[in-house]
Each structure stands twice: as C-alpha cells, then as structure tokens.
Amino acid sequence: MGPSELTFRGHDGTKPTADAYSPKPAKPWLSFIRPIRYLMREKRIVFVLVGMAIATLFFTILPSSSPHAHKYDPIPESFSHISHELTNPVRHKYYEPLQAEFRSANSGGKIPLGLKRKGLRIVVTGGAGFVGSHLVDRLIARGDNVIVVDNFFTGRKENVMHHFKNPSFELIRHDVVEPLLLEVDQIYHLACPASPVHYKHNPVKTIKTNVVGTLNMLGLAKRVGARFLLTSTSEVYGDPLQHPQVETYWGNVNPIGVRSCYDEGKRTAETLAMDYHRGAGVEVRIARIFNTYGPRMCIDDGRVVSNFVAQALRKEPMTVYGDGKQTRSFQFVSDLVEGLMRLMEGEHVGTFQSWKPG
Image 1 (tube, rainbow, N blue to C red):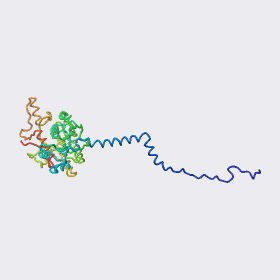
Image 2 (spheres, rainbow, N blue to C red):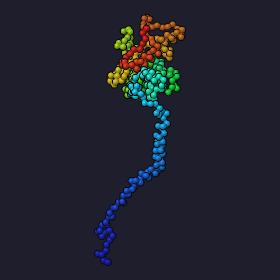
Image 3 (cartoon, rainbow, N blue to C red):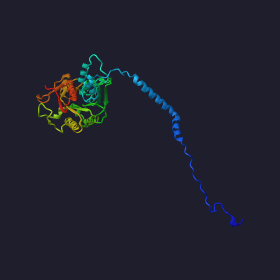
Image 4 (spheres, rainbow, N blue to C red):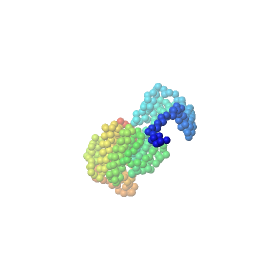
C-alpha cells in the first residue's frame, strides 16, 4: 500500500453524523398514579379517612344530643316586637323595663330560650379605687360582665377582692397611659388620682394619666363603638367666682399652679371627649364630681371629710381652713354611683354635675 493510499483516523475529512434525539413516549397513566402514591406514602390516606369518619359522627350526634332541641314552640305573634328588639338590640339600651314587661306577659310560664337579658360587657378604669369599686359592685349586681383596669397607685385590691370568684368579673393590672385592646360595650373612665396628696406627689404622671390615658380610652371607644363616660371634677372651675357653679360656667383656673396638673388635666380630658364626639361620633358622657364620702375612702387623702374623720379618731381639733364661710356640697358614694349609671344609660351628651345641694 503506497503512501497515497494511507488514511489516518480522524483525518479522512468526513464528519460523524450525530444521532437524532428521540424522547421516551409519555405515560398517560402517570398523572393518576402520583396522587395515589402521595396518599399511600406514610399512611396519609388513613388519616384522611379517620378525619372524615369523626366529622360525620360529630355532625350526626350533635343535633339529637342538644338539650334544648325542639323544646319550645315558635314565639307567639304577641311577642314579635320583643323578639325583634332582642335580636336587633340597641347597643347601649338598658333592658330592665323590657324584662319587666315580658315577665308580666309570661307570669306562670318559662321565658323562651334566648329572650333573657344579656349583660353588657363593661370596662371600669380605676375600678379598684374608692368610687370605682362601688360602681363595680352595682354593675355586677345588675348582671353585667365587668373588667376592672387599675395600676393600684391609689386603688386597692381589697376593694374588689370579694368578686374574684365571680365569673362575670375580671381584673387587669394595667396603666391606662399604655394602650389597651378590649371588646366592650361601655367604658367608665375613672382612672386618675383624685386627692391633692396623691396627684401632687407626681404631677407629671397625673397630667399624663388625664391626657394620654383619656386619649387611649377614647380611641378604644371609637374602635369598638362603645359608649364612654369620663369622671371629671369640680376642680375644673378652679377658684370659682360664681356660686353655685353651673355646667356652662367656664371657671377661674390657674394654669401654672401646684394643683394645675389635676385641674388642667381634667379640663383637657373633657376637651378630648367632646372632640371625639364631634369628630368621630363617640357617645360621651362627662360627670363633674363634687365632694364624695363613704366606705373605702382613704383616710389620709387630704380632703375635707377624711380630714375631719382622721382628726376625730386621733382626738385632735378639727381644722377649718379660711374664715369658715366657705360652702361645700357633699354626697354619699352610693348616690354618686346611681348618678353615674343613670348618666351612662341616658341620652344626655356633654357635661353633667354630680353633687347634692346642702
């Protein structure tokens, strides 16, 4: 073989032909097999079947085991207006008159299921204090569910301890300066030290409680649509030039005095309440409270009645400040609580004085 006849591998000038790609034929049954494999893996199908069996058993037994099933006949037409009011209740309506009407119509029979008065859910800030604890007693006795919010700066746990085992009572240790989220129908905002000894102890904290605390509670009332009652004070009149004072009197207040943290704080709280009413439609009530006395009052709070009682117990001469010609109005705490509850349930919007003329 001559040199001309030699050929070398890879140098013959011909390119190898590439094999054509032929994919595997699709398996139409694979889409059905994959879900079955997923269910069979780790016994998932067993759990699915057991869950279906439990659900079927639950919904089969539940209707027949209800103790009130088919117990009462449909409500007669004579009570149709009552059932309409109860199924579409006015949020802040007081239902005692409705109960009395229904009892008279059903004397001798049972009240159909669902027509009993459902208590309101009410939050009372400062509910462990002197006035607040008496208000809580009345609300619990009326059948409402009460949430007490108190930081125990002046309030005492002993004032509400007798409600601890009551399922309608809750106690939250909380400072209203911090926001609080609750679902309630009514808010009684009493949180603030009310005696000179206490509110002058930390004046900055006092005004923060009046302003920021009231702002937080009004925000809560706006969010949940609750009716709001603010306990203000006769101190908003300052050193009044008018006697007796009426709600339309603007007062004579020193904005930079040692008592201004309380006086101006309450005036600002009233302003916030009315602005929320005008701007956000919050139903507000403002009670300007005058001198109140009764059980659970603090004996060293520096106010007139407690000072007289403390000095009498210590067999000391009673101190009368000034020339003795000042006039004061005093009310017992139960009278005040009655007034607060009626104010909350009424339709009066704005300020209202709570005092007993002498």
